[in-house]
Amino acid sequence: MRLDNRVMALKMLFDNLGKLTPSSAIAGELGVTRQGISKMVGILRDEGIPISSVPHKGYVLEGPPEEDRFSPSWAEMLLWDCPLGHPILHFERIESTQNPVKDLAQKGHPEGVTAVADRQTMGRGRRDRRWESPEGGLYASVLLRPPILPGHVQMVNLACAMAMGDAIEAHCGIKVDIKWPNDLLVGSRKLCGMLSEGAVEADRVHHIVAGIGVNIKGSPTIQDSPQDVTSIAEEGGTLVARHDLLASFLRSLKHHIGILCEDRKAFINSYRGRCSTLGRRIVVSSDSGTLEGLAEDVEDEGSLLIRTSTGLLRFSAGDVRHVRPIKGGEGE
Image 1: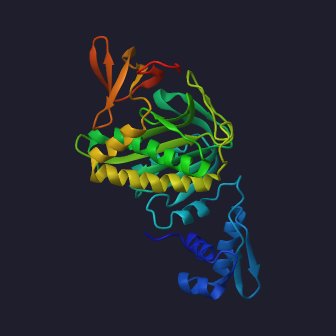
Image 2 (image 1 turned 180 degrees about the horizontal axis):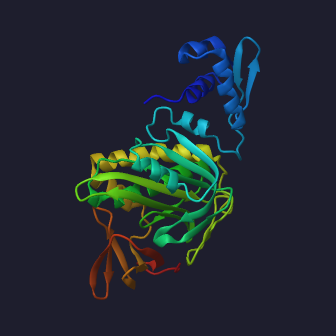
Image 3 (image 1 turned 60 degrees about the horizontal axis):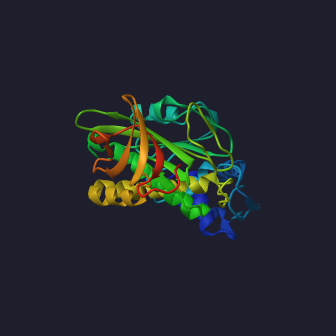
């Protein structure tokens, strides 16, 4: 994996943060002219990264980008040794970040390309619900090509939930719960939603495009959804720059998918330990109807086992609403 020259130049400046990095050193490392370096630095400055220049000598990276602006170069730099997040495509406004990544996937683009939008106009959730995505959240999609069997595709959703849970807890200081399969909750309120779409044949997975929506400063409107929503700001969490949260998520996602591919039982055991749905009375809505039961277990391929009045049922997809813990207590 080779990074774009712009990102490599930023990495050199970052490794020498607050100090002069000679133009000659950048030119020698990247094989570019001083004019080329000046052009790259101009792009980085346009992304809100504070870089000062010392005439005829070099450049100084003064600090991180402006917090409210998303810097794709900064995110890629933080992922310099991770195969995910290269390249990162940034859009101020787009219908859905899923669309450009799916297009590239169908054209055979390698794993890792990521799209990020300041705002989505036609974001989608499960069951094609419209997800109004205002500015102030992290909306992104990443192309994955995991070496897994088609029957295990659902587990990528679980990996995404654990990865974003890791990132939010590490950066924002908020304890989040995973509601099966991949919603992140604070209490009973939804903080983050995810949607994965893929191209799968009977014997192979061509690709999966995993989309995420995290409420950082504002809460979106979810069409026809009974789920209350919240945001990191509303929960009193530490506000985090979107490029930092994205990089942390993608690093953790690579880690969890690696475990999934190497030791599926260890992966699912880890998920079980973080899934707040287990042990609860729940209501499940699916294409076949609605039922209530006790969430007993998550199977090795990611399906949810529910004990109902008529027996044990298995769900691979559906909307879940928590009712109450197994031993009583407050309902949700």
